[in-house]
Each structure stands twice: as C-alpha cells, then as structure tokens.
Length: 533
Image (cartoon, rainbow, N blue to C red):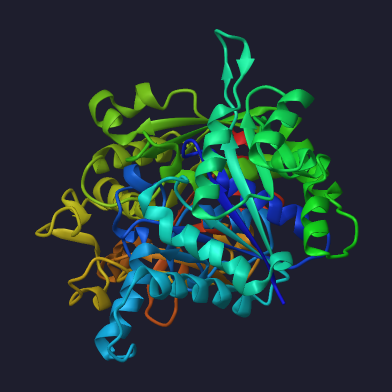
C-alpha cells in the first residue's frame, strides 16, 4: 500500500511548498523509493490554461497535454516522476465532476454536500494518482495558505485520509514562516504557533514542521516551537535561504528529514545517496568558470514565475557548460520605445519566449532582427519562432506586411496562420494543440547536430503555425525548415545558416529540461553564447 504525505503552508503564501515537496521527493527517491507528487489547487478555474500569467505564473504542460500548475515543473525537474493530468486537481475540476454526476443521476436523489461528496472526490483523485503511478510514496501539496476559505475542502479531505488509510500510512508536513525581526534582533515563533493552531482546529496535527527562516534556529527556538506546536524537536526542520533551490534536498538530508519520514512509515530502505546530485548539479552551479549574459525578451517580465521553466532551463544549461548565467529580463515593449541597440547591448545571447496577443510583438521582432544581423546566438520558443518567421518574411523575403493572423487578421502575407483543426473551435480552455508530438529532424542541420536523433518528442501549447504556402519562398531566401511534424506537414523547427546559433522551435523544450540533464537546445545555446563572447 502506498504511503501519503500531505504538505500544507501557513502564515503567508510563496514560501516554497513546491520546492519543499520536490526536495522531499528527491531525498526519498535517492533511497530507492518510487515517489510521485500531486498538486491540489483551491481556485475554481478548471485549469490555469486561460489565466493571466501575471495572476498565476506559467502554465506547465505535461506529456499528455494537461495544462497544470508550475509546481509540477519542480516535481519533474527534481525527481524521476512523470507528471500527467492526474497529478493536478483544482476546485473547478472537483466540483465539475461532482455536478456532472449529479446531473446524470448517479447520486440517486441524495443531497450533494461538501462532506462527503466533494471531499470524497478529492480523496478518489489522490488514490488515482497512487494507482496510476504505482508509487511507494505519494506527496500531496495543498495550494494556498491554512486559513483560506478556498482550501478547506482539501484540508478536510487530508484530515479524513488518515482515518481511511491508517495512522502509519499518512504523514502531515506543515511549511511555515519563522521571521527575523531586524529591529528587535529576534526570531519570532508566534506566526508559526498561530498557523499550527489553525491547522489543528481543522483536525490536522502536523508531524513535521519546515521552518522558513533567514537566520539559523537556535535550540531554544526549536524547543519553543516543539512545545507550543506539539511536534517533536527533531521534527522541527530549519529551511534557511540558500543560494540555489537545488541545494534544498541536501539541506533536508543533513537534518535527517528522510529518516524521520521513513521511521513514521516503518519503512526500511537503502541509505540516501545524493553524491551525483551534489557533484553534477550543485558543485558545478556554485563553481562556474565564467559568466554568460542572456537577454530574455518577453511580455510578462514583471513576474518571475511567468517564465519559470525557461529560467530554470537556462540555469541547467549553465550547469552543463559550467557558466554562471546572468539573465537580463527585458520587456519587449521597452524595445519598441527605446530600440534594440540600447536594450540589448553587451548580451551574449537572446531568447524570445512564448506568449499570446499583440502587445509587445514588434519589440520581439526587433530583438530577433538585432540577433540575426549582429550574429548574436538566438533561441526562439513557440511565439518566439513565429516572430522569427515574421521578421524573416519582412526583411529577407520582401513581404513588408508579413504577419500572423493572430495579430492582424487581414494581413496581405499571413506567414503564421491558425491551425486547420482550430478554425471551428470557440471555447478557449483546453482546446489548443497540447502535449507531446513527434518531430522528424532533417539531416545535416543545426537541429540534427543538437539532438543527434531522427525523431524527437516535444511538448506543445499553441493554436498558430507556419503557413506552408510561403515555404518555398522562405527556403529560397535561406531559411532552413529542419523539424517537421510529418503527419500534417507542420513546421516545428526553423534555423538559419551562416550564423553562430539561430534556431527557433514551435514547441516548449523548457518543460523537458532537468538540472542534471540540460535540454540540448538550451545547452548548445549557452555554449554558442559563451563561444561568441
């Protein structure tokens, strides 16, 4: 039978439950256990697919095409677990499922209530993840903060789970804030006490506390937390700020968090071994041989989480090449106002990520033109590829009005157009071209040298594609179409010759990058940027 770990958060949001969950998964996995992770999101949206990136951050796409919370990206980057549509559940999905069954008459006239019907649906979804993954341990992160009204059904389901599965099969971890008050030169435990008190009022007694703090926790502080929160002192774990998130598993291991968990579950496993992680990830990250400056020219630069997987993939490429990456976040609208020369001077590489809508598009196109003309290594992702096609069409093919029908429906030269299967779709949610699709790589191209494979599998999230009516003209003018989805002839990769590194892809390679296995597109992008410094 699987064991279940519920991870909650208190005091404030953004303490790093996702990183903590992934790190716990990592150290348990290092002991030979099979783990999987699940995120329960309290919002009423069915998924984050239609949410503004400034509201929610990036949408993480799984192999099976689910649009999910960005924390699933952390889960896949830290562990070997493969995320699917089952690994993320929202209030919207849960209520939708229950109401659909009620409309079908499945409840035989019963009154539908939060308890037992909503909580029952939540528990069934957790069990489904355990069943599908066949994991030894399932870690369930509950989004939001204890005390939020939206989280109550999920917390109630977590409380019930201990009764259903048995005390020794369920463990509760609470992530909390232990702030340092500079003026008083004191660490304060009261917020943690109140957070745990709120959790206990719901019926959950945490077994382990992860204490986010700037300063080390003295023994007397741990003893105080232990006393007031009814948690063993040994299980009061210090989670201090570190230079890199990839150090967190080692921080937890040093405090024998894995042994505390296994002792609770009465599990015996091999000793934890994080030597490869420490050597191939952390040591390489913290001892770079140089610095590479990369400009990320985007529309949602104001929020770090909007391009989370991209920033992590760049970091992974830095680890692989042993370079520190200095990311310069540049708003494409600023390029429209000030010009690329001023905004992009002294960068070693330019990356243009995905996005939607017309805002800032011309700034992205100018950045790509600057990279092409000045031989600066360039990587375009999704919308970044579409902008590269528009730039090439306008400036090298003589198509001055070249555009995407997303931005200008009546453009004379629609070099980017809506996918055929998208033309009759009205709903926005969950209707894009989503998930993994195969791509055939053309021989003797940059893509072939990067991937060293004939067929690749990459994750997609888009409605628009290159318009094949312009393909012959573009090839004549020097654009290489090096990756094709053969079933429908869709262009997936474009590149330019006589350039240190100019490649753009319709898919999202950032979702398949890991700290100990950088995605080849990012790895070679950083290598090219370092070589052209």
